[in-house]
Image (cartoon, rainbow, N blue to C red):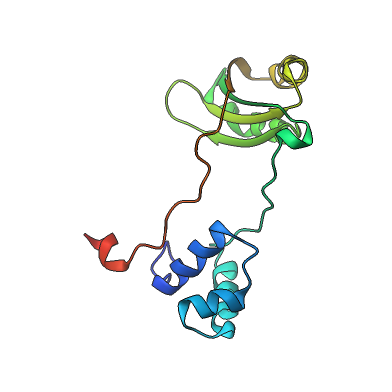
Length: 162
């Protein structure tokens, strides 16, 4: 499947529904979209095989699990060519939950979850800042997440072509 040529409006509607509620039964989606349950199964299998659907995730409240600190970390590398090596080592740090190669001030922008500020300090000092090639880091502690939602992909083909 090329970039998105083989994804039609029905696929987008199915994905949009499941992106908001991954537990919604295929039969309920079929009723909502006026198609058969089998159509939903076939479409989802096609999207999985094409790599459009990469997996299924459970969203949890990290604070209720004892992880009170969400921080974003701008990481400066000595050289951009060290990116792959740094990422390989950052993957081994369980507190690093998201990582992006970026333009702008930082080479890498990471999201980390920690129990408290002492845990954050330990992760920064004992793990992240000891990685070869990491020159320095800049930490931003999130005080509140105001929006966490999937992208709206259910717009019609006509609206995308305008």
